[in-house]
Image (cartoon, rainbow over all chains, first blue to last red; front, side):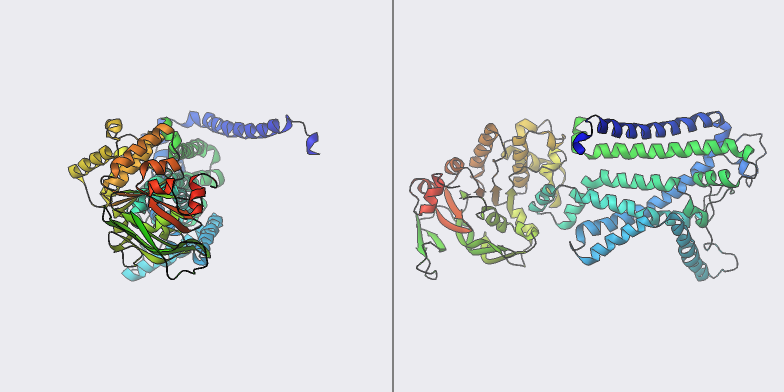
Length: 305
Length: 278
């Protein structure tokens, strides 16, 4: 049966599908760029001087504050997810007794976390971070009438995102640690290195490119993600402050709101297109960063430089 | 030069020689390593059977024998690298410079600084040449100009200095195979061990590099006690002062190298060194 399939069929079929996908991605990027181009004026980035600026009107919002908000929440998320993810992965790769049920359970739970729908993360963030942690802080400081922490805010949205992207960092870091050659480990131990010295001086430096790839993929996923933000702190328009306990503006959230709930779709279209373009290029940029790190991660590739 | 007493405890009917102690009539050099009735199991499999061996200071001792005979296992007992393998059990003892290696109280990191190891496959860190040699010194707390001096002297000792003095910042993986192995020797020598364990140090190299490594071993012999596993008969004959033949986990015979190769006492040794089985 298989013998009857002509030899040229599979190379062509697989190639056709692969290139069709590549064409789709390219035309997406090109199409968005072409549509957004007329709207990427200086005013779209920072706002025009003469335009009546009402901070609570979504139509007077500009790209720069949106990008700043997204950058802030992504940065805060990284501050939380990088140490949490690396510590977990180091435990799993180095200290958990190999083949133990506890480690297996932990690894499985991380995978479960990866499969949890983002809307659940949003609700969890609202219930746990906003309600339990934030509400608890307010109760502790004794001011329940006007909550300071017990409301959706930048900090809680960032922590919710950190939980959501934790599996990406854990899996990439553990994989990177495990793929450090056993020879290097043995060489270091034979020179009298302690376990901690092997970890700090051999394993982590050599796993760094793989770990960075994981972190960038996590950031890439988080920066375009909207759903968890719906409940935990994003707002259409704010006064522009970036306080930890205030709501914040966000690029992806703006795209979602403008495309589904705009009071005047015609008027908000320029901002929508510009936001979409910015979002796409942000993700392109982050993926390019991850690719460069992956390239540098392989010693052979590094040697060719 | 070597005399052995056959064991009183061994069953007399079996045709094997068990060494409980090996003493030297007129030892030229003091004893460095003393292995006594060392047995080793990987799970249920016994890899070493009551091996006893004395290694004199500042000599080259070659361990020969067919693959799987326990040479490498024996080597790894001496710096406790066997600890890394799960399910290893050891009985009997070995002393390096008077210290009982198997003693659970022994600080293994200190021990490994005294007993350096060179592996069959050179394994430099993917860092600069300098950082490779500096690794053991840095974890020992050495820094600054002292570090630089000791790195340079280790590279000189490993006969690598002239080739890499202008490439100290270059990634060690760019060196040739033979240079990488000499770099690993420099890295081991840098922490000034007493013993160098070499596990087929030249088996993965081209003939020219092998020659250089052999020259180097001859020089290192002046300062270090070297215990070397090799599959290469001529190499053992060229380099070593004494040779021990292991077979199926048993130390069959140990003697001055010239005698092992010219007039072995045990027929198994003779078969092996003459190439009748491998």
